[in-house]
Image 1 (cartoon, rainbow, N blue to C red):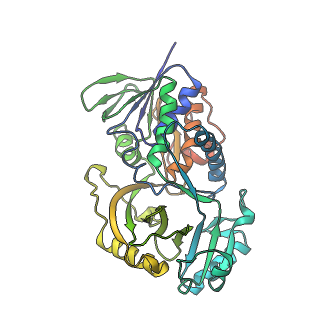
Image 2: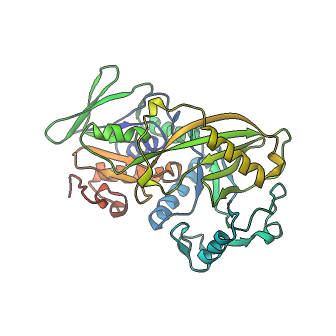
Image 3: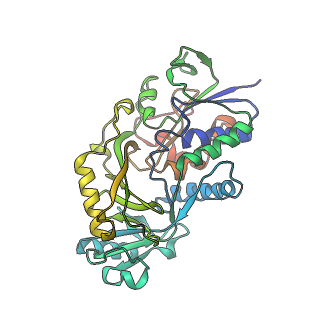
Length: 395
């Protein structure tokens, strides 16, 4: 007997889930996206890809990199990847010492375990005085930098929304129905089981499985069926700057250790300032995605521009040409919450940032759970049951 699988959200997570399901089954798979696919959280992503995190994330990223290599070799749309490395720069001497010690001892609570994964030999500490002796960084002023970590295996997706389209085009080839401009108003249940959904237009859709991959809307949708996710929100402001004079030099991404700012070159004539307050789960909150504006708060804007110009003086005259404010989902342990919940027939895919990097493995895990009833090797680290007080319908 055939089944119908409904996915709420057409960003990178929902697109990956749709693709992985369509690779495994001829049953009906439907994606419900409130606007156009990948036009919100995915579009607003910094879209970095790098090998850092815990052992679970390393395994997930390895699967993702292998899949992306295949996608890019035979692309359907126009995704692009720029490999640049990332320089985590400390402007205070004590923090530079901490970096050096972290490399020597294979990591600490901030940097994670540097001695694991397959880039262990490539994480390098560089003293501030030696940066221009080891890296070609003509536009960077090394004077404020006391020390830095350099990871070469980091890059970014130039067009993160195109990456979601890569999944969706393949999914549609396999028969997936992608319904744009179709917001979900309600998830229907009966006797402890999800049975379908109701769209904003009033259409009632019966489903055998409901998979919620709705980014910042996950919290609200899960609450509507009695599930309080261990997920909160922070804002994710982005500024795009265009300098008067273009630089011919490629720079690594620069992550400032003492602040929430990251900088990287988005194109030949644009630089991007990202803001991530980091490990702040206890202080985080919940935002209404419908009410989020597009203007970066003035204090975040000014501090970011000042810091960028301090580290890269060539950008002193750069002008802000675009800005937006996304919503970043975060979890207590920095890993996503993926898979079954205690409502049978209702699964979740909620990230702690890193959606671009982890979405391929999340799609694979969801497909295995709903099609094979297989918890997968990721279950202990990604299941909602890892948090106190939570169960799923199998536990």
